[in-house]
Length: 202
Image 1 (cartoon, rainbow, N blue to C red):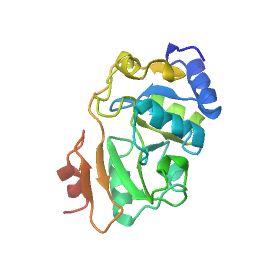
Image 2: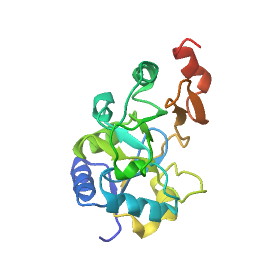
Image 3: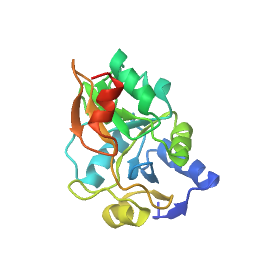
Image 4: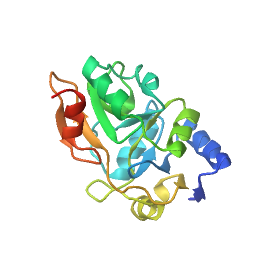
């Protein structure tokens, strides 16, 4: 498909969801940075994401339209659920044990999940079946882009469609591992680890 950068109109969101359903890749705005999305269960599409990002085969983060949409993919503990309910929709990614293997989990037993606080992103996720790969739209090792032009400058015509939603925060989500007994900070981001621990009463 010829490269296109388009607005986030309802018609273009329908187009984006059709591209995703057919195995394509779409760049879209989130509440943090621009994301690169595909169907998490589509092996060929996930392989394209690794190729486009020049990324080793490690689990790709998955965005959900809500907590319930992610329950079929991963197992929430009582504590991780408390954090999800407190910070979602929002800028915290929670790493959890997988309930079922999908290509996006790269055959690992954990996956990072999040519900973003952006109506365009949530609309696209809903139209795409409730879950969507949501890795940052950058080449591995380079800065995640805050706008669509930054995404295109890195990924170019390897992506089927770019949705232009204007400037984003430009700061990635905070990533916390809840797969073990105690939460561990994996990446500093828009929410401090202290805020998360406070919610847990630590």
